[in-house]
Length: 245
Image (tube, rainbow, N blue to C red; front, side):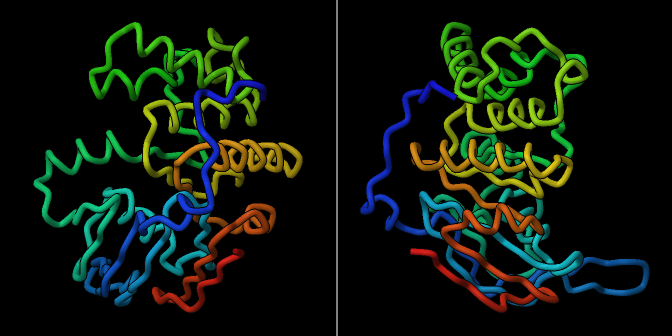
């Protein structure tokens, strides 16, 4: 990867900036038939800006629910969720969608690319959603494809790319609009260990050069080893938080 897509190195002072996510006594309960299932049980936490943060826990621990709340995909049963300084509970439904589109990027374990679109078109798509003009869309899209090492693959569709290349397209798509926050749910789960390691290195490189915060839900020990912040969730409760520096 040779392009730096205009990012600037983040200083130590910047990494100590205000929290990008705040949970205050956040609970989330789902209805399953006649039974209420408590996915989160009154969690309070802060996740600092400009960090590579990892949420870990066994299947069913609540980590994906936590990520969905941060991503404004779901709403808490009780408590307050603040993302990028905004109390999400204060926003109307249409405003939540707009806030999410402008401020948050997503990376999924299944890549979630549009199969009939080329790599270029998949990366460009979020910029169409926010109404960016054609010239700026083209500049950003090509810049991001170069940044993830796919400058020569722009015309290829997902089924013409390897798993690692598809995840690189997904990373470019998540970053192309310059979000404050990128959320990734098990981004290396469908990759072999060598490809997974290269994807982690890519994401860490981008995060170290940018002002973007990455938050992952993962079981991957490789990804955990890169974390600046680690949050352990068990049975819907925060049981540990560790900071690497």
